[in-house]
Image (cartoon, rainbow, N blue to C red):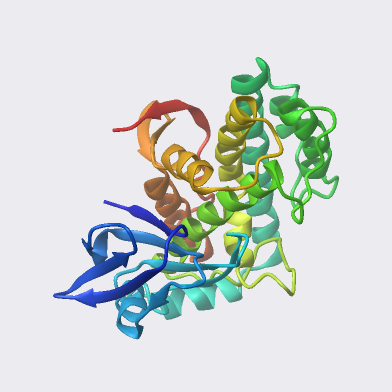
Length: 301
């Protein structure tokens, strides 16, 4: 199992006992979980205490720790340092990747993002607003910035004419931030497991982004969060601050299966395949990485 745990509502002490992750959360029974089952541990309560053993053992098992601020927004991640037996070889190939290879990879990522945005709009609004056709016009490196052009059309169609994507805003923007942070942690975990360094990006080169490659690879996955948030906005309105119920809705949505290539696939396996195939591209074993093209929501397995 790949569990996403969010500790944000009550004071908690998190440690290791008998080789298991022990959670002592105020108001709840003591819980013990096999460390290998924890994919992402998100902690935002200001009175949560974690032992060194919990952090080190979580990382050793391939899990990711996400620290959040007082608004429940992620501010830092702890990732496994060594996740693959050929890590040195793959990181060297990643660091030395020629620019044409990275531009072609970014072209494919943008194409798949636009196709998945068209899918999201079809679910939410009945049709893709031409984004699927736009995907076929993306050139190497996306010099025409069709990603940005599509975004302006996409957000208005998905969340209303008055919506503005603002990472510093609350309400729906805060919901999006939280969902993206969870997906980004899953992608970063998969990249480390594939022996890649999440800081060496294909396209993103923000000096304040320590996980540029994760930001690149997650782009086609973002519409999953968007579909979820669009449904939440219809159900709850747009002004509600992120709380435990909204976080639960987002996590439950991301924990379901999705239809890709006619098969039921979970987010974690899709992220792992994307990361592994990108490693193969860097080392010359493949010409193109895998990125999911979503076909539908399969629900819980």
